[in-house]
Amino acid sequence: MIDYKKLAGPELLRLDPYKPGKPMKEVQRESGVENVIKLASNENPIGPSPKALKALEEFLPEVSRYPLGDSYYLRRAVSEKFGVDMDEILCGAGSDEIIQLLYIAFLPKGTNAVAPFPSFSEYYIFAKSLRADCKWVPVREDFSIDFGAVLKAVDENTRFVFLANPNNPTGLAFGEKELTDFLDRLRPDVMVVMDEAYIEFAERPDMPDSVKLMKKYKNLLVMRTFSKAYGLASMRCGFLLADKECIDVVQRVRPPFNVSMAAQVMAEAALGDDAHIDKVVAQNAEGRNYIYGELKKMGVEYVPTEANFMLVKVGDGRRVFDELLKEGVITRFLGGEQLESYIRVSVGTAEENRIFAEKLAKVLGR
Image (cartoon, rainbow, N blue to C red; front, top):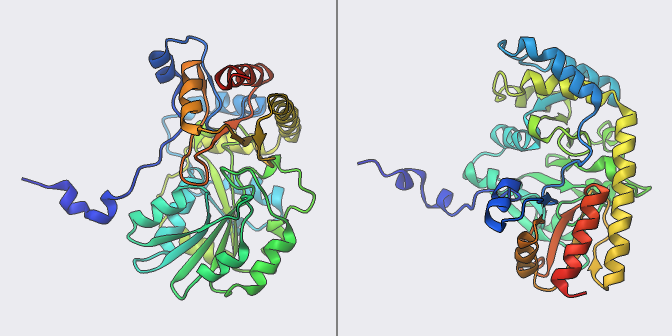
């Protein structure tokens, strides 16, 4: 008889799979509340650009055909938008796949990645799945990244440093000087991956121009996604910007049709609609400031954010998360020593934000 757990090995079995925010239908069933709102996955509450929806509609007659394997037209649009060569761009099925492809290409057994903690758990999960390692470096008490500690964690086997900016789940961002000071001190053969999934929402004036910095630092890589501000989370599409030699290597392990054609055409159209992104960012800022105001009225602490979500300090995070679920509000409890007293809440529509504030006040007795 076959023993799958034995074949996988103990190291893989110790991994906990990624746990996304609870689906709305599941909470409706469990709580009995019909009008459920989901503020757990940092999604765009406005939705995608109308131009992207029109592009999808026009594409539908071709759905029986395989997609373009090299995402040519989407890469061309990215090239024009960001001023990089097409051979410096790789498209993937979301940031998840791009991380996985980078690891397959450059992270053999016995090597490691380094990343601040807490951050995106897939940095760790994908590394361990390949029998490599990811070394977490705790952030400071105020959740800012300790770049000195990150540098100390880098050893002779380190291939990557992942820096999410703004960081998930803290919402904090760092400036260009912090990044360049770090890059100047780091070994030039260690790849630094800037995970900029939430960059469109950031308002900090000294945010790094990572794309421009790539010209000076050949070991700097930039990841972007269409899942957040562009509102295409279910399409699974993102891209990597890097030196053409890096892209050439990663292309060798990329599946032949990894990005669906529906995703490609929608992303290309979305990329050309700056007015829609401006609308999304403005609504996010308005909603974020509204939630700030309501939390202050309640006397509840929060972590000011550069993204479309925030950490809210509620005392017993697990209890408040569970109680909000009973009220039909899905947030995120991440747990762990640093985050046990917090929940993470995404900025929603004006009505969703109002309901969240109302239900949180009820649960907290404020």
